[in-house]
Amino acid sequence: MFIIPAIDIWKGKLVRLFQGSYQKPSFYSLTPPQAARRWREKGFKRLHIVDLEGARAGKPVEKELIIEVARQFQGEVEVGGGIRRKEEAEFYLENGISYVILGTKGLEKTFLSSLVEKFPRRIIVSLDLSGKKIKVEGWEKEAEESLPEILSFLSSLPLQALIVTDIKRDGTMKGISGQTFLEVVKHTSLPLIVGGGISSLQDINWIRENLPGIKGVIVGKAMYEGNLLKEIKGNG
Image 1 (cartoon, rainbow, N blue to C red):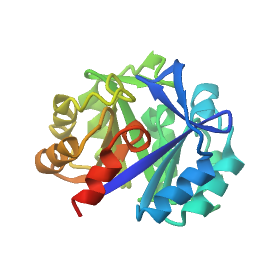
Image 2: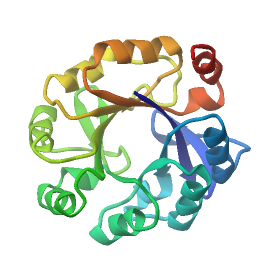
Image 3: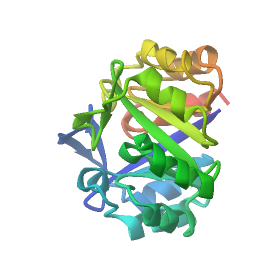
């Protein structure tokens, strides 16, 4: 199971949001490339990058910066945020990015099927959950189909993984709500990457023990502000 540090970018800066709110950013002194080097030096093998401006605008905004961050990391990199056209996905996948993350567009069946056909095992669909509701377009709207309906379709495709984020917990460092993730595993056997509120090694151990098929855990704020990095290193 990968522990995956997150780098969220807003106006060129490293930032974390509280419960997905653009009105509650926490900025950090590290630049995104500096953060990437830090996580590489700490031995992490995979990095999660989100173009927050892109997610809100509906198109990538920080493409060149993201490519530079990936170069600094020198490992597997997954990127999301505003990727809603095939050409945008192709740009990333042909310029050193390992995997592309689709949120809003990942729920459009024709688009997703076409992209996965061209790039099998290189597309990740991200489901941002508020309870059992899927939020889209920068977490500002609600998906029309239900969670079980969407998971049924996604499970039929050769995706790299499925990211599930509990946005009520995201950026809060209050610990996970395991029920959110358990609801997802009822309906899919896709490899899962989970995030939202993870603050301690206890949270990570619960995920490892209770979620079959777990591929990774995305950790943001707790890596920059909390003691999680120390806990991880202290446990091997």
